[in-house]
Image 1 (tube, one colour):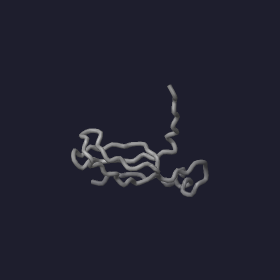
Image 2 (cartoon, rainbow, N blue to C red):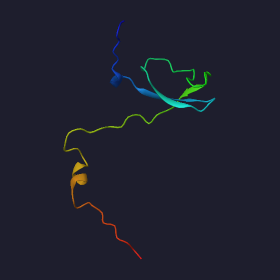
Image 3 (tube, rainbow, N blue to C red):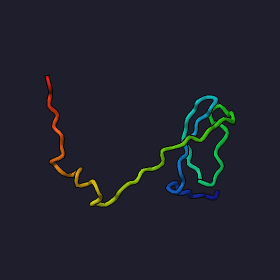
Image 4 (cartoon, one colour):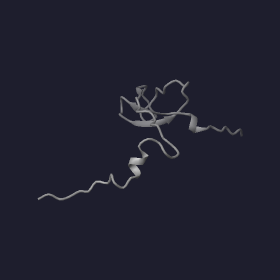
Amino acid sequence: MKKIWVNLNHMPTYSYKCEACKYKFEHFQSINSEPLKKCPKCGFLTLKRLIGAGSGIIFKGKDWPGQEIARSKENKFEVSERL
């Protein structure tokens, strides 16, 4: 039996929704792959690929703009009760 290794870090996750049964799911697939068409739940050819928000930027390390604000103790808000 031949093993195939797939690095999922390089494959985007696509969200799909079936127009017939309203089933929603996510699927890992290559950017070059054709979009899925057949719903795995009902079997109809009514899948639509949903437009996602994409991935956000993750700043790693220290001293990125805005971190000094998050770390400072002076910027903590106090909540007072008003009667």
